[in-house]
Image 1: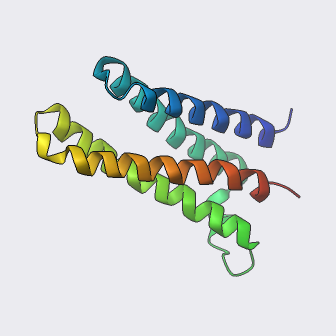
Image 2: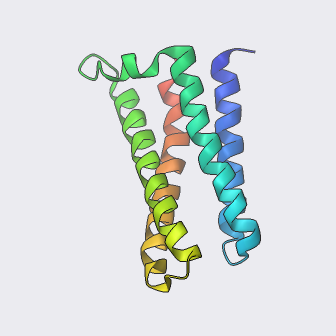
Length: 128
């Protein structure tokens, strides 16, 4: 099994766990640890890809990369940015700041859409 297949399987599993975590958003005791696992695993997956494929080195060559690869990298980086926003707003929400709930929800759905598009574009970005 190639590393690309292993990464695709992990990506699908992360995405599936994300869908499960979102479905449990009203059950805090399930939602919070599930989403922490999702964010951690997804960031670790990016690190694995970097260590295995030198992804950052390829990504900085945006002018010579296929457009789909640039789109994929942009979506993946945007997802991670929203992950950090979710961590920040999630901590505030857990601390009792109910005013942050709408922003957390917006960041969450945005991160989900970005992660969905990242998963879809990954199939095209790794195709030879």
